[in-house]
Length: 305
Ligand SMILES: Nc1ncnc2c1ncn2[C@@H]1O[C@H](COP(=O)(O)OP(=O)(O)O)[C@@H](O)[C@H]1O
Ligand SMILES: [Mg+2]
Image (cartoon, rainbow, N blue to C red; front, side, top):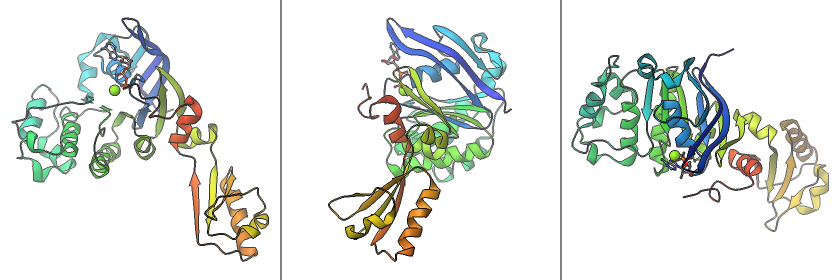
């Protein structure tokens, strides 16, 4: 079995009457990207901050690298890198100076030039932090989490508010860390981010984990299906498809099936009967729909902010 780097059991956290975390258990394995997804107020940051050792749990156990974390061992801290939610840095330091500054707090260090190269920041290394775009600031933030060459990296909503292109740049950086074998605990409220990056996902809702697992298992376990869409299909021929299709007003025929072999069967019928269509699409249930199925709400509706 793969080693658990983070092991959380029955964790709760109350803030003066607010039950932020209501009993969650999960583990994060060595070398994986584990993503906690959920709306604002779900309890993601509280969980991450407890795992980082900067907040005390109300109850439950927290083991990091096999050690009960309340001890805050220096050795464990050396192995952890953190990008906090909505972090800021010094406006008037350059990218290189910023990384050097944060590096100065640690005994174990990764070379700054190496981090700059890794995150593709060479062109920007002498640029002042204040002049960087949001996406570049976040990439520098990932760099700051690497200065002590950690094994475990916490990234709390690293792409919130970024445009799709800048988000992509941060994803590239996370993928590079993953290839290096780092263990990553990523929180996000973007479903597609977890779909793209995570090996395993925990859906967080109102302080509880509503479901967890790899994307395929979550989809299979929570109403997953495929929808075959035949655009520009002659409605007269729908009975030849063999399943119960739905026809919408634009002449699109859709057939809902459970697995890929059923998709093949529909396509075989199309070929056998030489049925014409303008375009074919197959859609799979996504994490957004899984979220709706397990929480009874959309991520936007669930947003407490
Ligand atoms: N320092 C705090 N004091 C009081 N309540 C807090 C504090 N931090 C978070 N909360 C509350 O705990 C709940 C979970 O918040 P948080 O962990 O920040 O969720 P998320 O990161 O998913 O948005 C929210 O209801 C929030 O208002
Ligand atoms: Mg948060």
